[in-house]
Image (cartoon, rainbow, N blue to C red):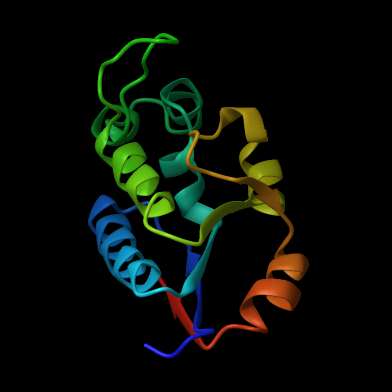
Length: 141
């Protein structure tokens, strides 16, 4: 890997398998020394929300139960699979995970509804201008 490599990832799906593939591939790139920026939008938003918010967004579906496990503050219970894989991704190097501020608005959620691995909300234009424009590689899921 060449020094200065930057990967930009745009995630639009909430499919757990696709999120696993993205996290694994992005972790490998980050461990090689590259900067990784991931932008979650559209249908991926419920997957990066805490259980209570995900259940509100997708009532009657097993999405929240399958992807998350809510814990009381200080509870040592391990996180759910999506939360764990995204936390591992953020620990793998120079990685930042962002939620699209417009998608959050459309879904009716706030930054406080997101799992801890997410750095916060970011506008699409800012991501395109600052992260995607300078990327040496761009992938989508």
